[in-house]
Structures are given as C-alpha cells and as structure tokens.
Image (tube, rainbow, N blue to C red):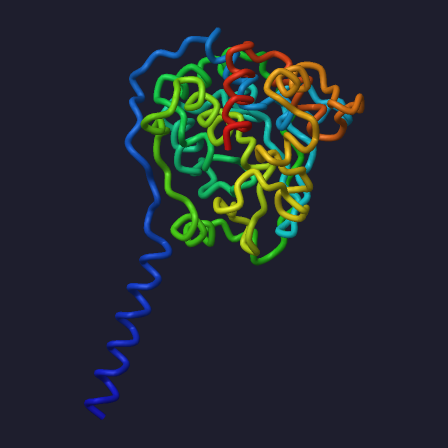
Length: 291
C-alpha cells in the first residue's frame, strides 16, 4: 500500500509539472509603454504589415480596418476583427500596454489569441514601432459595427489550449540583425519574417498549424496557411525574377511572363507593397534573392 501511495504521488507530481509547463505564460522582453507614437510612421507600418488587406472585407462592404473576410483553416474559420478606434467594436479602448501584449505575446482581453493573427511575426517589431502603430490605429475613424464572429469548433475554441501551443512553438523576441550581412539584407530579413510576415503565408505548417521554419519560404500547399507559391531564391529565379523585376511586381502585380497576380496576393499588392518605399521593396528583394 505504501508503494502504491508513493507511485500515485509521483504520477500526480509529474502530471502537475507537465500541466504547468504547457500552461505557463509565454512572454518576451517587456515593452516600454511610456513611448509616444508617431501617427505618420504608424500609417506606414499599417502598409508594411498588410493590416488593411487582412482586416478589411471589401466584398462584404466593410470600411477599412473594420473587419476582414474569414480565414478558413482546418481549425475553424477566423474572422480578423475590427481594429478601428471605436471603443466598443474596435480597439479604441485598448491601452498601449494591451496592444503591445497582443502584438508581442499573443494575449488579448479575451485571453490567448490564435496564431491566425501573426503575432509570432509582429513580436519582432521594436518598442517604438509598436507605439507608432498603436497611435495610427487610435487615429483611425471609428467604425461602430463589430466584425462577424469567428466560427471555431470544439475543442479548438478552448483558448486555454493555446497556452500549450505557445509553449511548443512560440518564442517571443525582438529582431536581431545577422552579423556580417549588409543593412539592406537585414532590413529585408526583418520585413519578410517580421511585420510583412511573408514567411507566414509562403511556408508550410505542421499538423498543429505551426510554421515549419526549416522550410521557410518554400511555399504552402494549402490547409492552415492557405495555398501560396515558394519564394526561395531558386524558385524566384526559375520564375524569371531578378531584384528589379521582383520590385516591379510588388508594385504593379505583373509577373515576368506578363500574367497578373490575383487572389490574396493582389490585395497585398494593392493595399500594402505598392505603397512601400522603394528602399524597402529593394531590401525585401535583395534578401529573398540572397537565400
């Protein structure tokens, strides 16, 4: 009997330890919530981050940033929320600290956020950029109509389960330039893996919806991340791209074979990359064609 109680105690301790590991908070470096954001810089970050393309359901007649079209995945249908300055339907009632927590750690007022929102990319942004983006969103025209509700079936609708997902796959941190590489290369790397989150769409994911970083930019066959072509150096060169052509395609959507990019990428070009600064377009092209 004594051995039985000892065995039970070991099992309980092991179970509690395992449970705590998968439920423990996952947070990155503390953000500076005293910073004052710049709206103009923030408006450019809205373009870098593709916020309009994701958070605006044009076909549904929604106003900019007031709610996007549903992202259909094997885990459910996720609707990007209203992020205008409306205090009830949007994020007008959020503090900078709350916004930082969502962008950096995937935590919102409702609890853990799903990785359909690419906080694993936004976490790389600097404290000042987060403050600037917050200021710009707070300066938007408020839209009082909330976005539609996401349709997430059981058991994926249990947000607490995301704590385990984060402990397995999420490591919040700030961007660190690669030593020995040029400023342009590092800027391109930052854009592709950070705010522009090219890697989020153009990479495969595992059965739990986590990015396969070992196959970054090799394309997504569909499913969790949607279907997207590879954008590795080899794939881009085979498709006829050099740096100048890639920059031009990101401006106007025309491919080297005189086709026009459609679907979600057309929205990204219209609402984001076509409005980027030339130096950022060149940096992204330089990075992708260097890999």
